Length: 365
Ligand code: F6P
Image 1: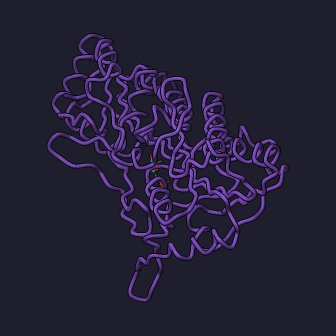
Image 2 (image 1 turned 90 degrees about the horizontal axis):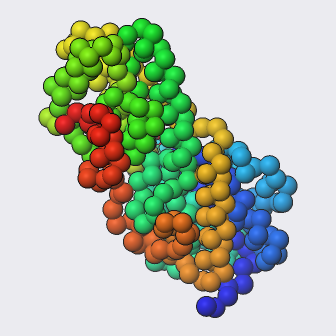
C-alpha cells in the first residue's frame, strides 16, 4: 500500500448534527497533527462553508476537551449541496451547480485530503467530488442509523438512550394517570430509533415506517391491555411511520435543504385517533432535537474515535472515495458508491422485531 504524504487536510461536518462529531474531528486531527505534522483546516458549516470558502486552521487547543462535547466545533448545515446550491433570487429560490467554487477552495487551501463527516446526503456529495478528482474520505454519522454499508453509525446509541429515558419517564406518569402516552421519535424513513428505544423502554406498541400499521390493530391492543388490568399504554412512533391506508406526515418542505422534506406530526395524529376511537385519555410527547443534543454516550465516543482514526489511515493509504464502516467488531473501509446504493431500513423479519413481538409488543399489523 502506497503511503500518501498528508501535509494539509480538511475536515467538514455536513447535514444535521449528531452526538460524536467532535470525537471524530479529534480522532482525525490529533494524529494528523501529532504523527504526520499535518496542518488541519476546519471548514465551517459543512458544504455551505466549502462553497463559500469559509475555513480556519485548527490548533491542538481546539481539540482539547471535545471528546464528550455534542454538536460540532466546525458548525454544520443541511442546506449547501454544492451541486444544487440554493440561492435566494427575487423570483424565489434557485439552485445552481457551485461545485467549481468548492473545488477552487480545495485547491486554494492546498488540501491533500478532505474528510467529510455526514449522512447519506453527504456521502452522495463525497462520491461526486471523488469523481471530479478530489481526495475525499467519508465518515458516516446519523442518529437515524440508516446508512447501508455500516452496521451502525455513531450518534444512534446516544439518540436511543435519550429516547429510552423519555419512555421510562412517560411510563411512570402514564401509569399514575391511567393514560395512553404517545412518544414521537426521529429516524426519517427508518424505524431504528423507535424500535430500539421501544424495546428498551418496554413500549406496548411500536410504529415504524417499515411496517405500515392498521388503526384497528392499534386500538385493539390498547383496549385489550385495559381489559387485562393494565390501565395505561406506551406507544413509540417513528416520525416516518404511516398507516397502511395513508401517507407519512410531512411537517414542512424546504427547497434549500439537501432533503427538502422535514417529517413530523404523526405522534399528534396517532394520539388524536386513539383518544377519539377508544375513549382513552391520551397525551403526546414529541422528542425532536433533544435526541440529537448533548453529550455522546461512551459507546458513541469510542466508535467516533475509531472512525476518525480509521479515516486518517484510509487517507494515508490513498484510498479515496471510501467511507469508514463498522462490520461486526471491526472498523474497515468501503467504497462510498456501495454505501449510497440504498437506505438501511429495519428488515421486517429481523430478530429485533421477533423479540419485540415475543414479549407482546404490537406493531399495529
Ligand atoms: O437525519 C437526522 C434527523 O434528526 C432526522 O431524524 C430528522 O428527520 C431530521 O434530521 C431533522 O432535521 P432538522 O434538524 O433539519 O429539523
